[in-house]
Image (cartoon, rainbow, N blue to C red; front, side):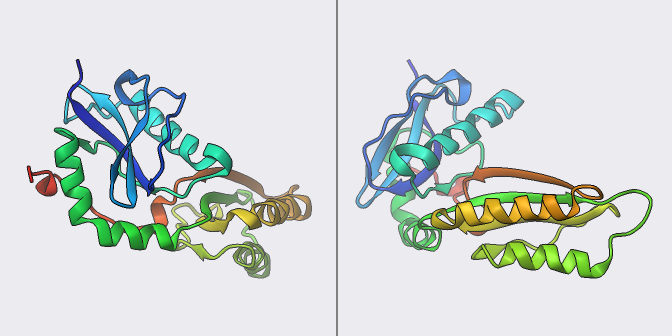
Length: 212
């Protein structure tokens, strides 16, 4: 029987169980509470799970279920591989990180992360005014964005955006407008919603996983 806990993220205290497969095939996703916080967890046989494609996909699938649960939940996502010896150890870590977790939840309350990549043609560069127009249109319907990661000459835009749930329809409309205006020359890759990895900076490392 699994004795350890794999942790996906932290939410405002809530008692939820999700019908989605977790890391290492876990068939029960539930919560462990510490004061006003709840960690979303599943049972696991190891504290060092293999980083397989299947496990990474399961980790992300659980977080997406949390985002959509009962009208939507804000979640501070944990990086892949956060497994703890037992609930006592996990609660000790949550105690130590409580202030940062509370602040992180406040910063992302009512939001999701959306990814946008705009790819230009090989034949000629995209005019700067078009690039600026696209960026401005998306910035207007978001409350945060990452730096533009243009790792290829063909990339016009490559960002993650923090978007309020109430503005999700407006963001979708902005994407539609960009595709309608530039669909013949540009290709838009639009992904999400994701847990806001790029907009919280909370590090819970192995060094904090001590008994308390």
